[in-house]
Image (cartoon, rainbow, N blue to C red):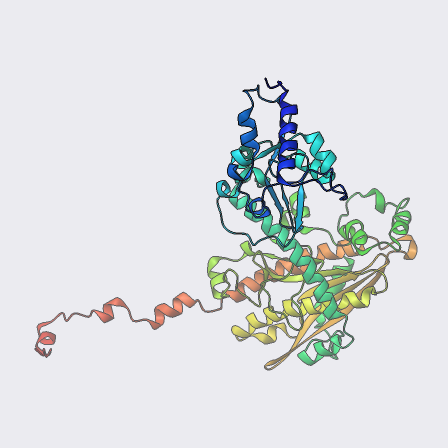
Length: 509
């Protein structure tokens, strides 16, 4: 009568019997203690095992019914494993429970198959204990031991990939698009700033401007006498200054000392707001006369037409809000959305009249003067074009139409810009109004640029805005021109009113 064995002993006994029946033992071989697989290699590669090729089922059928083998806390069912990236395939079979066979060959090309076809059926899967697989296969077995025990866990492809990032529910599609647009605009602005400065670094850039008609010096005639008197008022008129502990007599010199040798961004953040104030911030704080003005910080003049080189991108720009001009005036200027124009820097800023550039280190203020000169040339060209259309370009001859400030942590240069008009030719010049030293006389002129900027906005920009709007009103309206050129409906459908007129009509049938 056969002796009863446990499930594990019976499984090992079946392997031993099968190994002796399939291949004789070679005592001279070093492989005599390693279990061999009787299943053909072709069947192992294909992932299909037939019970007729394996004698395990016959041996088991001769034994009496035994209880099922004990279950392990976690098992690994592996049949065929192909690593596409590393280029090898691991094969297993029922006769080799304690070993894995690695075959190095290029992995086959991927084919579009369903997940059910790509996985092996549950009947042909082999069960390994995780500890045993890790001991036999090393790190690979340890990794395989962490896989799910059954193929059902891989039925859903979504479980094999991380879920997509979710957008906040509180953000509407429009807000999300605006957020992406702001990020892209910021990145584009930074790249454009680097590119335009590369253009200004050319040694022959001032000469190129002169060939186009823009000179970084005063003209022989200079600005008009009345404008020279206006500039004196802009420099001398007093303006209230804010309370700032860093600009007090006790702290001002220490404040400047901390800025020496620092980056341009540090000077831009700490010193520039005290040199050129924000007109929008002042209007919110109570200066209601400045409500029609708008600031721009490092904004590309995307709607402008460059004079020579890249589009202007000043560190600080002040211009007129679009709301100052009526719909009819904008129509006369032929300003449309996303179109280039001589009259606007951006959609919200019309006719800029003030720019400022900050430069530190070896580049110096001479380098900051180049983009300032280009930006103001672009701004003045639009004003001259408006007056040319109404037939009064001589009204702007030698008239100051804009201002600029170039500064670093030590000095500030203040310029006035004006055109000279000779028939159809227009040239642009600038005149140095003041050189401000923040260190001289213990910072006596520390608020000079601040007050000058406010005087420009109040004493120059606001009166000039009214003059400019009245000039734009003289431009022809495109709609009115169409109505004058097109015949009226009454003229097209004229009907005779008298019998005499009826008799003179000749009809052709």
